[in-house]
Image 1 (spheres, rainbow, N blue to C red):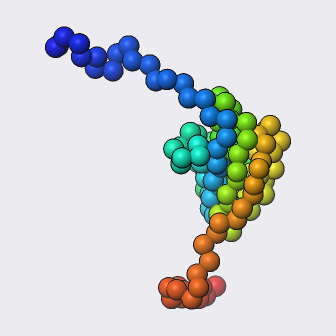
Image 2 (cartoon, one colour):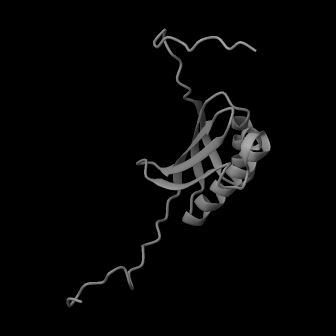
Length: 131
């Protein structure tokens, strides 16, 4: 080994202290993903219903979104986050549950904005489902 090289040993990552950030909640019918970033957009913490142990149709429930938001908030608080702006996206049932959980976990919400993409007669929709 050459003199002065480290190969990953002895190097510690500097702990960041972020007081304000953004929380993105993507809630579909099948899953909810909560991503927490700093103001520049660098990901600080994230969690999804699958990583919290929910499988199949249980991932689409409001309770799964609540547990997911709880975990993401815990990770963000370790970094020192105190207030956040919340951006929600998608039609799922987990949006409201996740926002309520974030509020009750001690993070101060400065803004709640729905950024769901709405087509202005863009792509042709898929065929109608026959049951």
